[in-house]
Amino acid sequence: PLDQGVIHSFKCYYRQKLVKHIIAQCTLAQTADQISITVLDAIKWIDLSWKSVTENTIKNCFRAAGIIRSSSTPSSSMTNMDIIVETDIESNNSDNPLQQLHSLLVHLRIGGSQLTAAEFVDIDSCIPTFNEWDDSEHIKTYIQVTQDDNEEEEEALLEQPPNLSEALEVMRKLHLFASIEQPQLHNLISDLESQLTDIYLDSKAVKQSSITDYFSHC
Image (spheres, rainbow, N blue to C red):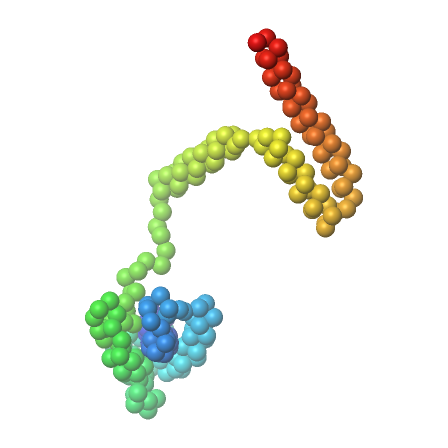
């Protein structure tokens, strides 16, 4: 039943609100990038559009699907748009959603051309709503993920360790962290910093002695 006209009716109302929003923003926007649609906008439009779908539309769609039998059952040759228009006539609504949408589209061009209301409602009808995967696609995906993981592991192995100067700078940042978040870590950080400082001084002493030795041989 949904595919007999309920979805099309919903899309009619939703796209009305979308076009109105774009037209309203065009009065202030200088470029297309300045026209934005938020998730909250879409949620509100979905709620209002579903509430706008009439009870008669839903009944006619069920009849067209053969679920409800009555003397007024719509012909099986009727299209989704026929059901929507007929429903609005039954509801004494002279401005059916297609006519309202068409009147809005007069002020808007999409892709450089002007679409009819019916074309705009069905603009995404050929877009797939899901992907059909076979085993080969799953295998390709698994191989690609495995290769990516291996590359990440190789990059991790190539990571260079910090030198002594950088390690001492880390100690300074750890002291700052301890002062604000975890004061009990100060002693542990100080001990580690002291050992790193000793290693740093020893390395300097080794370098200095080697230079002295060089001059002593001259």
